[in-house]
Length: 533
Image (cartoon, rainbow, N blue to C red):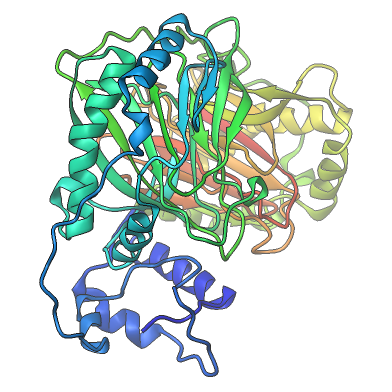
């Protein structure tokens, strides 16, 4: 049974999926009863020709019991091919010349884009476009995994080689044989095999900046399977290409390619191939594609550009020792958090869970004064975007109230209080800290990157300012994960909340999720400190 999903149901389903298992969700048959009992029966819905909206996979394999079966017809072998004139030797030779010269080209629905790196865009790629319509209907019946990490959030199928169905098998065979040979002839690469999955991006899903470099990947590809409702750039989901700065790091988005049905894109995996998939915007839109890589037997040699974080960065080794300043904790911090019984309770809780959130930590007048001051200071954009994207405060010549706020967290009194909270040796002479004041706007994030998280255990303090009401921020949670886990399971998750001091003893990695463009909150501030014994 197909029916049109309302915005409320879609939001409810996505929330439930995320809550079921935050970092890897497999909608298997064992969840069927729980899922179905949670669904709401809709009245007065219409029966469209096809299902639209998000989350297109069935809740269980028993869905076939709800569908009347037609009398089976004699099965015919599915035939599929590239658009015929794409394979003409004269056309391929013409493309080869422009490819080898690194020159732009556009003819016969085939385009070569050379800046910021070489990308080929082919329209009407499959000869029989109706085949893709039927293939899309087959895909609606597949089971998908929710894939969510620091870098991305979307749904993904198993590799095509493990999926069944005549049309899925046919498209897989076409990609691994005819298309592989066709791409090989254009690029001159001796491609050997493919890996391919189906990706489904729904509202708020995204894939952040990366270059695809891994092992024997040589050419990345995308075949779009969009529905007849069409797609506009303001729906998001574009393949976005980034240029590089003078240090060889990704810099700015300089080219957008919107999804289009039966459009095939491929590009070599190189030191220049930095790209991302923009966030999907719209409850009734989804981005469906087959994507993967053409591989090569001898892995290519990549040379990643060197990266050294700024000395002022939170990822540097620039720590500050505790300092004696004329400041009283009682003038800043709510009295209850300085009481002996509360301190002992906090210490006991941290000993058991390695984290705690202290609500309304600062006195109201102090919090309000800081928030007002943050509106007027100078901010600097941080990057590169394959690692992080947010703004930081320039710490020189800040207003007096902020200078005092920074002094509060560097003071010997605060080091002593944190010792009392945690029983860590932060009251000793060797203890030190570093800090960063950040401004987050929609589109900001901080990835795991290659920072050496195991170098030392640290005590993190995180505070938020200007978050608004609960639910105004979509995404932007700070999460602690074990880097050795193939699937990221959050050990601790911190949601943005005004005037809450979050204390986490970190012996794992930390990242902050992408801040959605669809958040009602247009910016907030994050103050983060890391203390070491």
